[in-house]
Length: 439
Image 1 (spheres, one colour):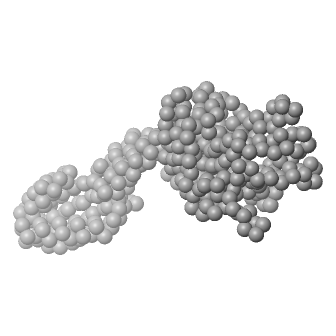
Image 2 (spheres, rainbow, N blue to C red):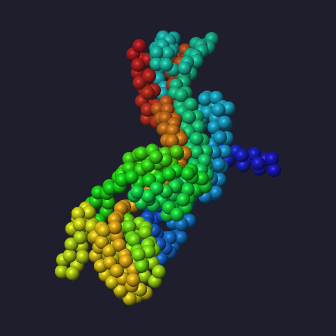
Image 3 (tube, rainbow, N blue to C red):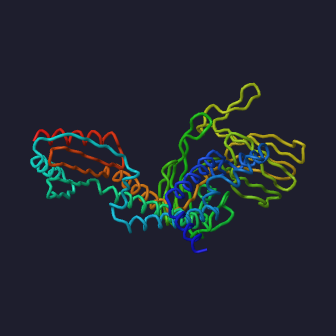
């Protein structure tokens, strides 16, 4: 049992285990990146995916990237990697740099030759290596045999340690982020203040983070269009009475939360009266700028479509541009499947039907905000930078050993070992021999 446990611990701390596990994680995350993400889709698109492509919907619901990174199994794998890398790092720190360098696994190159003056060549080698910062050990036997051992590139060992530490940072940060992350999409109507704790504002909500009681008010909201899609959405948002400007790709950060605009639409204010009594006075957020939407009132189904720059052409209703030069609401009233009335209303107009007076005194706009919290992002960036520095030091500080043996009869042999870049080792050793011969 003790032997099996020892083997298990040795395997967990091995490089091959860590590489295999990381490779599996990367493959899973790459595959999951191609699945639809409900945070990038509208409600209608997500529902249509469920109806039209149930298999893809199931896979996206269970195996999309947000689902995977918060799954207990993913957290467990990161914890396992953290333990494995910790054992590997401690093992390396316990060993010296010399033991860390394995000649058996290194690249090797050797040279042979004959020198006329062995003692002079011996001194020339020592002088050459000292001038270029090599670590030197040398000795001379009583029989006139000269031996020089030199070493360079030891900083690569510490580059490896820095890389391992950066991996530990990334693994533990992934665990913390998965536990504390928060993603949500909320809908905000311009001019109406709400609290972030109000459950009615959420279209989607994930994560265990308890949101703070933040007052939110969209102060101004505008959009620029290219074709039938908003090119830019921007405006001002009040967070606990603190004013911030937001744009697409320029989110607002407040109390550890990031607020980023996503979708944009129109919200007409419907007022419905009967016998001079107000039965409804509310903004209705139309789900799309370019499609019919509806809401139910009693036994009436009220279809609404917005034309920002309305015009009629031979019975066809269209919009010239997407600037609100001539905003008109096209309204059709149904009772069950029977069409009762069809009207076109501008702001401030109304009509009567079945004893009701329906008016649109004004309209405003709405925006969905993606609200996210990921405390691990800055640490991820630091860990990534450290990993790049560690790898750079590891490969730029190429660790190599050279042994020079000069016999009393002038026979010369130089052997070299290099962790990386065998061609560089060969060229370097040839240059050393040529320069020493010229001294």
